[in-house]
Amino acid sequence: MSVSTSLPRRRRFSRAQLDALDREFESAHPTEIIQWATATFGKGLCLATSFADTLLVDLATSVDPDIPVVFSDTGFHFAETLDTMRRAQVRYQLDLVVLRGTDDRVDVWQDGVDACCAARKVAPFRHYLRTQRDAWLSGLRRSDSAARSAARVIDFDADGLVKINPIAGWSDEQVDEYITTRDVLVNPLAADGYASIGCWPCTEPADADDPRAGRWAGMTKTECGLHL
Ligand code: SF4
Image (tube, protein in one colour):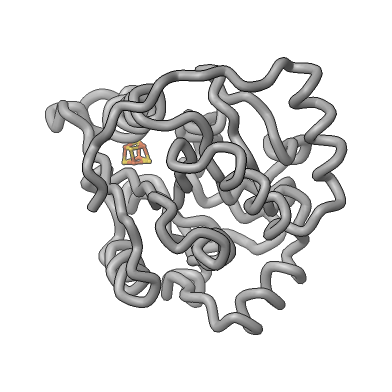
């Protein structure tokens, strides 16, 4: 587990500079992007994962074995997800940061999904980033959903920190090939038809053509809020 350290807050890039980097990285391999990120942000960089698989973890730890890997424990994760996290910690010897909300009274049953996600996932994650990091890696891909179809490789997040999506442009075929080649850990729920994996009250199996259709199924909600 990571020990909290305060880092000086720095906004290193203008919007124009970030736009230029985004164009430059559009055709770059994810490893090249992660190498740039680790060289640029050093200990100010972390990786966020939901442990649907360890593809991004595998890529990033190949560049920096000590990169902090952040998981938001909402209290509603599937046992298979927590087991994937434990297996990843053993395999990669992760510097694992597990974040938990401070208000367990807020839950999906009493307060609705937006309040539940805000309290259990978004608020702890945003607080962690604002107080301890300058930039973060995400496994977001354009093929995840229509809402993510325009995702950039590098952008500012809602708080002005640099957010890097090294596999934004990867196709499902590229993901499958990397997983097979590197024997990447995959959450066993994927084999049961869960194309996207979140909390158990809000996740159903879904068709691979629309992987996030099983998240908050039947609702207008499509994102927890981390990627807005
Ligand atoms: S996905 Fe569902 S259970 Fe998980 S934090 Fe959001 S509303 Fe709560």
